[in-house]
Amino acid sequence: MTLPHGVARFNRRVTNRVLGPIVMRLPGFGMLVHSGRNSGRRYRTPIMAFRHGDRFVIALTYGPGTDWVRNVEASGWCLLETRSGTFRLGQPRVFHDERRRSVPRLVRPPLRLLGISDFMELWLVDAPAG
Image (cartoon, rainbow, N blue to C red; front, top):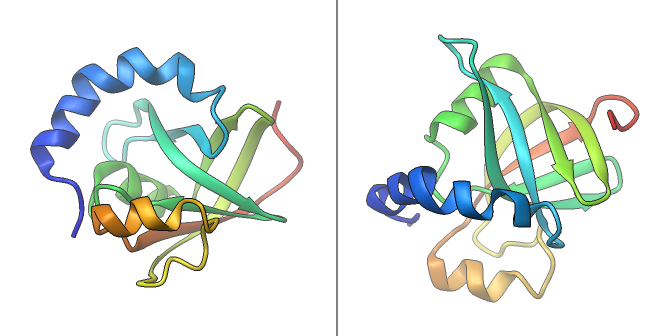
């Protein structure tokens, strides 16, 4: 289960624009910068991301079929802006984890309540970009 598409549309049009600047200051959150598959247009998507060494895991709150997931898979890379810096990430891999072992223990219960068990794994491609 993932969050409904209506919630996604509302968040994209309203919530993301309001919370965008705040997201950069919260632990476990960041801004994913990616390019459209067809348009080449640059997009910024707020996400929950958790670092494990050179690997980042992103909770797919709207599921693995969202545009941003497909954009990152198609290009093979993205930028992740967090409060600790900007990182170039690559080698995207979407996976399902019912037990949510790839995210911190504190985050597992809310994700379980929301029915979120799909994630994207990305690896640090080179040194932080910023």
